Amino acid sequence: MSKKDTSSELIQEILLAHDVSHWLKRVIIELEKRDIIDVLDDIELLHKIFSLKFEEIKNYE
Image (tube, rainbow, N blue to C red; front, side, top):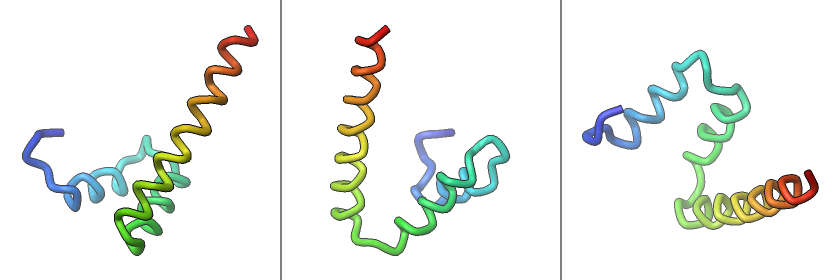
């Protein structure tokens, strides 16, 4: 993807991609309807949760 891509172009590319999960495509479509600040806050929280889970798994092994 080039740096000149807009968010709309990138979203279209992702939605058309065969190697992107259906889950992610559904989430992107849903998030497009929401306030961007709320979306970013939710994404930040998800990132924190799953980063912690990853560290727990990594430390367990």
